[in-house]
Length: 340
Image 1 (spheres, rainbow, N blue to C red):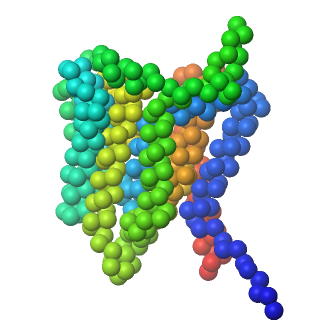
Image 2: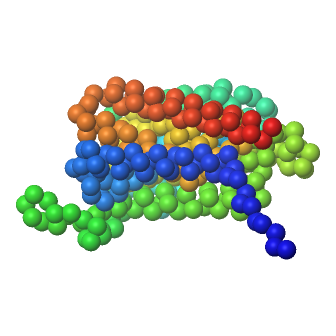
Image 3: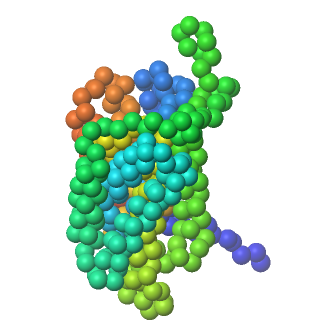
C-alpha cells in the first residue's frame, strides 16, 4: 500500500512572510488600478529600490538582531555618522576604496562595542544602543553642523553610474523613451540580502540566532554559545549599518547632521511588517525586504493621493505597524490553539 504524503504546515516565519508578500502585491495592484500614473511604470519599483537601498540593508541587520531576541536603535545614527565621515574623507582627498573601508570600520566599531556590552556584560540592549545612538548623533554634529556635498571626481563617477534597461522604460509626454534606471546601491543591497538569506537559511550560525531568540535556555542545553552568538548578531548589524551609510552617500552625494533621521524606526517597522517578532525566534530576510517595500508603497500611495503633509505619512506608517502587529498576534494565537 502506498502511504500518503502530507505537506508540512508552514512555519510561523514562512506564514508571516507569505502574508506580507501578499499584502504588498495586493496593495501595489490596487494602487495601479486606482491611482495609475507612475505605478503603471516599472521605474516606480526601481525608484522604490533606489531610494530605499540603504534602508533595506539596515533592516536586514536589524532583523538578525531581532531574531536573536535583541534590539538596536542606533542603526540610523551610525548610518548618519558614516555618511558624514565618508563625505568629509572624500572631500579631503581620500579614495573611494578608503571611504568604503572607513564606512565598514565605523559600523564594525559600534558593533563590537555594543555587542560586548550587551552580550558579555549583560546590559539591556535598549540602554546600550540608546547610548550608541546619542554618541553617533553627537559625533556627527561635531564633524560638521553644515551640510556637506561630495566633491570627488572618482566618487561622482561611481555615484552617477546606473544600469539602464530600455525595454522596461516608458515614453514621456514629448515622445522620448525614458529607460528604466537602477543605481549601484540597489545591487549592494541585493548582495547583502543574498548573504543574509544564506546565513539564516543554511548556516549553523543562522540557526543559532533562531535558537537563542526562541528559547535561550534550550539553546544553552543544545551547546550553543549564547553570548558569542548574540555578540556576532550585533557585529553583523553594525557592519551592515556602515555599508548602509556608504550606499546612502552614493544615493544623495551629500551629508548633513540629520541624514538618516528616523531610519532606525523605519528599519524596525520594515522588520515587523515583514514578519519579524520583537520577542525573537521568528523572522526572514525575504519578509523584511518586502516589508521595506510595503512601507514605501503606502507612503507613495499617500503622496499620490494628494496628502503631501509629512504627518500623513507618519500616521499611515503607525496605522500599518499596528495592523501588522495585531495581525501577527491573531495569526500566531490561532496557530498555537490549533496545536494544543
